[in-house]
Length: 115
Length: 118
Image 1 (cartoon, chains in turn blue, brown):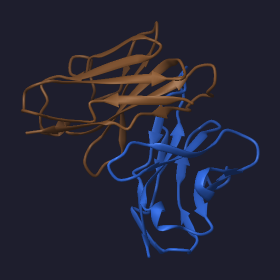
Image 2 (cartoon, one colour; image 1 turned 90 degrees about the vertical axis):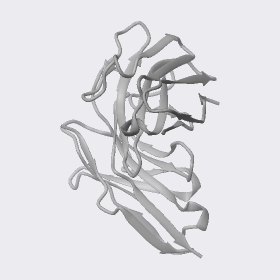
Image 3 (cartoon, rainbow over the protein chains, first blue to last red; image 1 turned 45 degrees about the horizontal axis):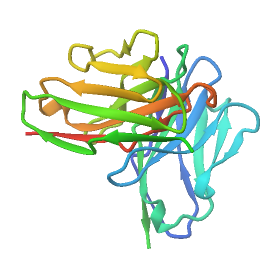
């Protein structure tokens, strides 16, 4: 069965520091991978996606993620975080089905950026 | 651009009553709509996947009898939580897919309908 693991429930970094949020997936075929962000009291916004090709994908607001097939990972990175990046980040994998709409989400990582 | 609107944004209902939520796609055709629930302190669980002109597929632990869904056209879907109890509280998200523009799995999400059950 498909699954997504985000091992860090909470990450705290100082403003201006670099960031990596970890994501490991389990999927038998080539996965479609996503990172979503949920700001307080809001829904989900997609940061970036990976379908194929270059394993490093660029997203919005300076975020990027790197797909590793050997490691089954899709870690999210940012070179310099801002206080407004404080939110919950969800990694997701698209799992099978004809429509491909079945997204499996990880448990999320709460990012707190200290001023 | 593609947008998804959900309403109501928040509802408080008494235990045992029902709550209907709606999802409107603007700027694209919502061929498929996925309904998710985020319970307090948890991740997003898929409730059901609805594709126009196909049967609605419910995930394990979710039933049509409890969460009836309507998806009558390419811009609108609704879901009702029947006989809501405390365990049904949470944020309900609608994610809609543009068949022409999106690859599998690319969903546009609304901001959610938050259900509080007293």
